[in-house]
Image 1 (cartoon, rainbow, N blue to C red):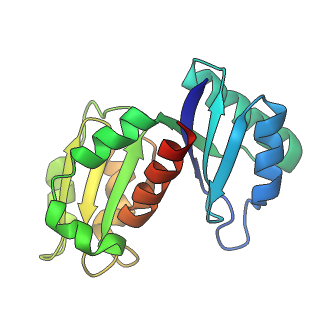
Image 2: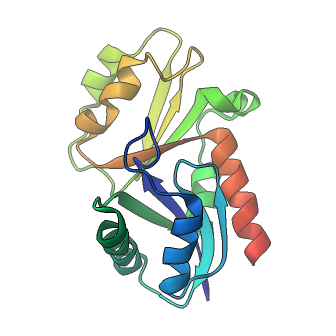
Amino acid sequence: MKTYIALIRGINLGGKNMLPMKELVAILEGLGARNIKTYIQSGNAVFTSREKNPSRLARTIGTEIKQRRGFEPKILLLELKDLEHAMQSNPFPEAEANPPALHLSFLVSAPTKPNLQALEGLKKASERFQLRGSVFYLHAPEGVGRSKLAANAEKLLGVSMTDRNWRTVCTLCEMAKALK
C-alpha cells in the first residue's frame, strides 16, 4: 500500500463546488483507499491505496466526483517523500514561525517557461518567492488575500497549481507519517 496526500483544488469555497468530507471519504473508500483522514473542509486528505500510479488515481477520483457532484476538481496526489522534500527545500525557513504567511503551491509539473520577471514586478516589498521544481514558495507577511503576486502566480508560471499554507503542509505531513 502506498500513502498518498490528496490536494483537491477549489472545493467548498464560497458555497461553490460543495463536497462534504464524509462524501469524499466514501468516494475514496469506494475506489479502494484505506485509512482515510481528511483535514479541514478545503480539500485535503491522506490515505493508503494499492494503486501505484498517482496520476491515474487522481483522474479516477476526479471522474467519480464529477459523476456524483457535477464538477471535476483538479486533484494533485503527492507521496509522503514528495511532501517531505518540498518542506525540506523551503527557501524561507525563518518564515515557518508565521505559518499563515508561508505558502507552498504545488504545481502539476515543473513550468517550462515561467515568467519570473513579471512575478518579480508584481511582488510587494515585503514579499518573497522562489520556484523550485514543481513547488512555488511564497512568503507573504501581509497575507495572500490582497497579494497581486499570489493572484497571478498560476497564470505567470503557466502551470496549474494548488496552494497550502505552512501549517496545513505540516499537518498533512504528520497525518501521512501516522499512516506508515
